[in-house]
Image (cartoon, rainbow over all chains, first blue to last red; front, side):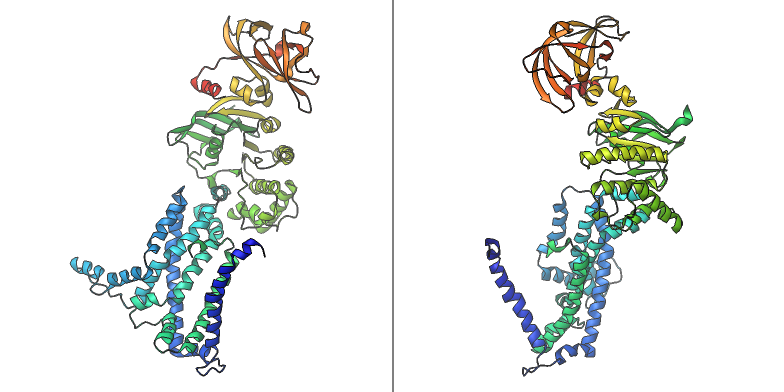
Length: 272
Length: 358
């Protein structure tokens, strides 16, 4: 064992203690009943109509949020590339800055903004405009997700876009492609790894979140994350909670497999 | 002849943030010509090429192509193609897809495109490379694919922006011959940008020497080498002795206090001039046979010849000779009259700046 691998030992210990062992604990709980006997009922409880509905809603909202993030982020990344800033870290700073504020606080702020008697509605009333009723709806959750996860979409796309040599784009123009053809045939395909990376980094947390749905969806809207959380905290049923977690993990592993396939340069991992 | 001009650049001016790159540039390119824009970095040669290609818009002036003003035309509507400095191949496509790109945009038929790919790969000696990826090719191969990708579109003009800059010496020389062959086979006009004077001399029909946004001289490689118009050109194209002198009268020039016979006339009497003598044109003879006497101060073996420094009349002369004369030897220097190139002193401040910078 050389010196460097020796230095990694504490980290290895940390990983085993706080990642590998808990994972096995979840697998253990997931496949055992309360009395400790083997069962697959916990995993099968995903087929319970309420849980299935939550899973489907989670998928739906995560999909919508990811799509909105992509639609917002791509043009934004293009604009940032066009600005030709020498100092890339400045851009990164602008996007990371809000993330230095507590995630809960930022989401709570949205609660205050969207509340029936919140800032937005107060302003609308003052302007004699009809008020909006968004809080405690799926729309509010989507707003919260897009707001919180947008930087995770912008940065990986921006990172691949700035690596595209301008002469590659010039070459396409030179060979007769107009701006739209250049985008479809050259720029977008070359930025695809960044897009995949961004989608994964937005989709996975959006799929698993329970804080955003808790704060902005009231207690009416249950995402799969909320269901799992309640199994642990309210029902005190760790077995079913673990079983459902394992199902959710399949979706995450699928996303990870996607990222591993397309994003060899790990464009966005600098944020995690 | 007006219709001989394929491209005509008229009064082109280009500045980036008050930094003037091209100032009132006028240049025309003839049909089927191999024209090289030659100069040090920052001389405006690449900017000129990019203006012809349509990637930059001049601040003023116009680009005329076959009699039509194309100054404002975007690159995709111009009948010319570019080979970029670092090849700029599309890394997400195979070689065949790269070459087919321009043809697919023009909606050519599948069989036409297939034939063209085969033809182009044969032309650049890379048959059967259709399905390779860009990353699996060497620099020289990528360069040839970049050329193939450009020429399948049958452009009237091929623009080449230092295409050999990233290649090693041997490969560069091979590619130079390859480019000359391509030019002859295709019969199209080449506009070539380089800072390598040897490359320019080897390949060009016409060389345009540029410096600081100005054209210093336009001519055939022989003209540029043998009759440089000013000290910058003389110094940039090959090695030379550039000595401030006085033209005593027609056919007599006073170099460092010694009168040399020359062949130039019409400079007037007692006129200050610059004299250029190529190191290989100086003959080493016995001290009593030379026009001036000197002492060998340095000696380097260069393969084909020896490079010697000879101190004579207070100036260190650079001499290339196949005969060796050891350091410290007394020698005579002799120059044939027609090998003395007389140049007017720089007239404009811009030319002056060049000399100060050296």
